[in-house]
Length: 458
Ligand SMILES: Cc1ncc(COP(=O)(O)O)c(C=O)c1O
Image (tube, rainbow, N blue to C red; front, top):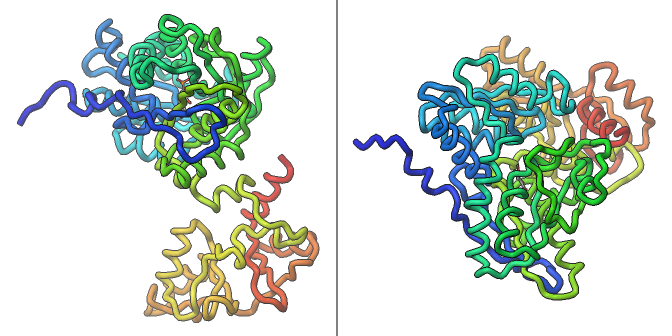
């Protein structure tokens, strides 16, 4: 059996396809997307994972048996883990806690060690992910700190692979490239290459609202950073490798617009991208529509949307975050996370078993379920403690029916009940059942109340 020192899959990094956007209004322009999601690790960061490890091996900073340490929003970690683990290195990654569960699970499945840190603190704070990674790199013997924010092989990877690929794929005919900035490796690498071959090319910045990058590129002033939910791009500082000299336009894109564009891209073009792809697409479309002459524009699908299925592509998560607007009533129905009228209620029937109820709760990540007869008439509510009590006592255990374990003495609140009445129910540790003569509308739990307060008080 062959045992090459370099796994063959690494040959698949780069040379990603370029596809034309055909179902959006691009004004007088032609817009192309480079599908970085097609890299074996699922993102543009495979390129720098490979480049930074190869360079560290060449210059002796990474030796056999050594450890690769990095601060990462996930994708660089996946690139480093893909290359590093295949080559037999230990990989230790520090990831901010807003990153999607899918990325963290993927990293762990590859054998990387993941340290989760706070995403609500900035540079200089002891828990800031880059500072934690730097500290670990000092503490672990034979550690190589990949340090994408300062590593020259990050922009070099894009200068030597991403940029010449775009140049060849557009037949040397491209007017603008729309990029986001995380470490600034992509922006800087592309800028350096195109300055040599096409100095008039405009770099266009796609930046999340809350990031300091767009304003800095426009005015040179560093504003106060905010927060944003898009992953992988946007910064609260200017990375040392940043080259903004070709940036001619910068667009600040809200989370709502980013997520909406990612979802539209899937529905209209069949392309499943991550949250930042929505930011890039939104900015690229704005740029294209503002042009008065035809231009050829390139942007990126930076990573695969499969790692955001629980977020961007999950209606429940989107509405919990206030990113998906549903009908407003001006009463308690506005606080219901899963409304009956929207077909979003997760329920059980009275004849279902406790096993079914338990599995449904776990799948939907809820602690209680309404019990609906014929799928519509509310006859009870069952929660985790009802299940626990009954599987431990009777002989039927999980085979017992819901009707024997549920609470059927229901106190309901009408949609027009007051906030104080709702709070009184929640304060007693109960879930509020919203119903009136027209039927059952949904449940309000303490988590729903917290989500509502976060949306409205933020
Ligand atoms: C998910 C994601 N990661 C990384 C990048 C590029 O970041 P960097 O500036 O680190 O090259 C982008 C760019 O749009 C991105 O969307």
